[in-house]
Image (cartoon, rainbow, N blue to C red; front, top):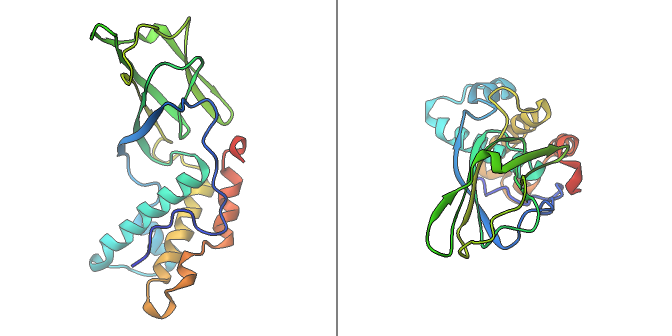
Length: 211
């Protein structure tokens, strides 16, 4: 069994993006779109035919590799819907990540009187610059807000077929590496290592702002 590859040696983790409100939480609601690398591509890379018996195992490795590369670069490699929950609206913009941002679907809150409110699209705007995406009010954020009631729902991720070539190749290499290390004779400390070639590819596309 291949262990969860988060925080492997050799890849630097990026800090939390600046501007994200710290008095709340961010959660993944759902993932959609196919993975950016298919099982067939991995089989071609390894020059093997995995077969139906190992199909689930290979798909699991691909998903884990996609998540690893995404976590290491702050890039969304598949379509994802996220929700940010805040205690209150911040003084400034709210950072939305991972990149690229697709759409802010809704900004909702509850007033102190208990009324549920959804901001109109004309009341806020998204600002996208190199290495960052934020949503900010056109004038100012609402003040009459019940604590812990602000919710921002948005979608992120490259469109199918548009993920960076470096990311796709890193996923292929990482999946192939873990697949080749599955036998007991080669398992152990080495399974926790990420090939330097994968780290080099990740460093080419990692969001520079967070280094």
